[in-house]
Amino acid sequence: SQQGEEDPQALSIQEGENATMNCSYKTSINNLQWYRQNSGRGLVHLILIRSNEREKHSGRLRVTLDTSKKSSSLLITASRAADTASYFCATATRGSQGNLIFGKGTKLSVKP
Amino acid sequence: DAGITQSPRHKVTETGTPVTLRCHQTENHRYMYWYRQDPGHGLRLIHYSYGVKDTDKGEVSDGYSVSRSKTEDFLLTLESATSSQTSVYFCAISERASGSSNEQFFGPGTRLTVL
Image (cartoon, each protein chain N blue to C red):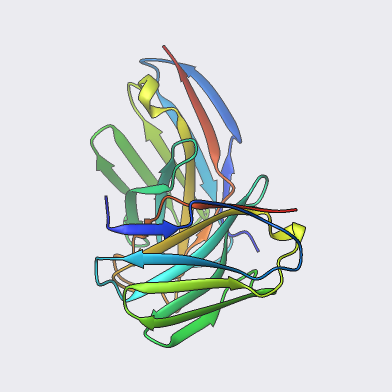
């Protein structure tokens, strides 16, 4: 069963604009992670936010977590054409042996 | 990139034939995972391993078996391939379990087509 659901499914923006993707989940989590997948490649870990954290930054990435609403958002600032990829949220639930449950992803297209 | 390789990278096979996919890591990570990725479904966990000879089922394990005889190798076997198993298969590894920094590192994927 799908835990995380990303929104929107697809997003098209111009270079230099900010991109915001959202993720909603259903059950209590230990942490929530965001991954990027370039076309035809494996997923790459971007950032992890723990359930007791509300916001985290890494370079041009900003992640927020609202456990009361069971939602997270990923903001990419000053986007570049190289940011074109699919972005997935993944949740780690308590006692899950390290297993992650992935959402279906948001496909981001950044036009030069 | 984390040292994860998958072989083969592409395979075309016929319905009813056995298929084995291999994942090899050089990171000495304890946890290994097999996922399949299909349009409209995202990534779904097939099986995972939490140590040598320790494996368990994931969300979509029917029709698949796994083995882990060494830390570095995790094999996924389709005993009798079906067209519904046409997919892209990803292996992943992680150092720790849930409750800690359990980010996963992914291999490049294997594209399997069952005719």
